[in-house]
Picture 1 (cartoon, rainbow, N blue to C red):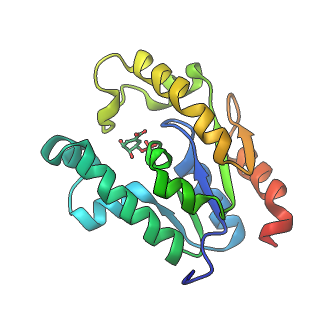
Picture 2 (spheres, rainbow, N blue to C red):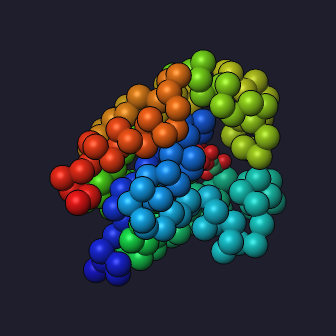
Length: 174
Ligand code: S3P
């Protein structure tokens, strides 16, 4: 059962796709709230995503992420953005089948530029460019398979991307 009717849109994509920035803009335009799965996890755990990875391990983070995303899909009525790896979970994929999923696509050069040194992103430790490339290669087909709408973000301002999302989803979001 969907508490608040579920999110108006769910943003997916890899690190550096701009999910949080664009999600906030889309939510503001719609006059609804915004939630980000990483922030929800941090609130609940009382520590940063980075600390969860280091102290508890990635599988503990993924279990928290699965539960947090399931609850947010049920309870959050605004715009929801998901951490880049959340969609790899089969249970999460099943829940997303009935959602307005928007994939923010980004190429290697822009993704690397946007994540900078990768600070706060444990999966990027080491060679940031090589890690981002690997994640893009592995995950892009998953993102594309789950998306109802795909928006290219390379070289584009967040406001322009947000406007395209609103237009694309207008019929469903109205
Ligand atoms: C991850 C992406 C991060 C965060 C965690 C793992 C991933 O979220 O959930 O560091 O697996 O791609 P963002 O995509 O919001 O940076």
